[in-house]
Image (spheres, rainbow, N blue to C red):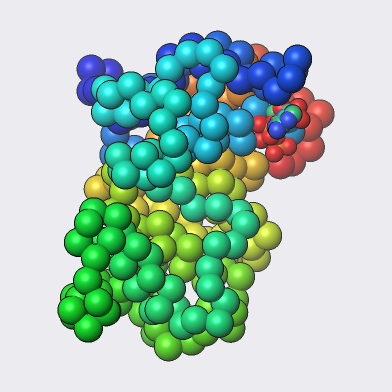
Length: 250
Ligand SMILES: Nc1ncnc2c1ncn2[C@@H]1O[C@H](COP(=O)(O)OP(=O)(O)OP(=O)(O)O)[C@@H](O)[C@H]1O
């Protein structure tokens, strides 16, 4: 494919003390697509995710975002460049309403660009906040406190908070962790809707979900890239099959 990648890792490695958690991984993520990072426990998925989000710098190699070398910049600069992340660990203000949580995120984004104004001066914030809540399916929950939402709804709210920065790239770490089958289905539908206008990269354990939703899959094992391709490529890959053999039904 000749399309320029939105984010690219060039031979990245990451060592913790003497231990190499990631070794020489080169991946090009295509824009407007859904890419999933998979691999058995300890494969290096979270480490790779953290390199893409700027949580830490690679020990070796480079990270390019829209062709620009962003290796070693702070997480804040990654966010500024257009990379947002949604975490497993909740990042919400539980005693604020759903809409207030999104408004705070929008306000933080506005202030980051030096345009901070008093609340009353930003009449568009509530409207934009409501639009984001509609996108994630929480339009009817705007006045509920964040802590009153069901688990799946809280995850959807975290996505609305991440979208407040209008990111080009959305990184999601196990977006359906701990969800019921119904919540998982709703989240998968939401993720599908987000892709296209944005690029989405997921770290995910649930194989069935990954195969059903992804356009590209990157497989890590013992910190190395062992395969990348379409779900069909990955399904038919002998090395991937061997790695997952006996892993149970993740
Ligand atoms: N901060 C750290 N210090 C030392 N070792 C680490 C650190 N972070 C990760 N590791 C090690 O690096 C390896 C890869 O970890 P990582 O969390 O990236 O894997 P993972 O694929 O996300 O695993 P899981 O599916 O279990 O979450 C593991 O052996 C882990 O113990």
